Image (tube, rainbow, N blue to C red):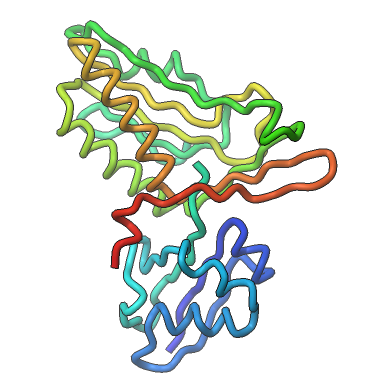
Length: 233
């Protein structure tokens, strides 16, 4: 049977490809496919403990048995607008355009909201003592949108807020540009602050988005960390 295999971030560079159609035996698992590529690329095995698997755009265990036509993704640790609004006013987007947090906040705010909390992550000019020239972001777009919406709706149910917006930019970003924005509106300030804080923390740990830092003398993919719940067997 045939499956489609996707690679992102540093794994894409290790394997030398972003995707590949692969013939596998009936009954093969996600772990079997990863092992196949690890045999071809020795350094891939070193990253197994921090790599998550996805099957058809959902996180999956290594022992998941595959079916013909499945889409598989190997996801390195996240570094941390297609898509759009929802019927209840929340907004979840992936975009390659400049982020306008003010415009998004105005779209989210309701007449009964007395608090609007805006968090923006911007590109700084240094990383661990090295001068950064620019950043580059990529993601597993279809899965990222779904995961972002799941997180946002969970937060909306957890805190006494009106609406939440989450947007992340892809592609090349220059110094000072906003890469991500999380906005929460609420009748009162504390739940708005708490929701925005939880939103950016979960986005950075759970949404498959990767960052590459570029310097005058080279570039490197940034390994952050997955949420521990996703790593659990």
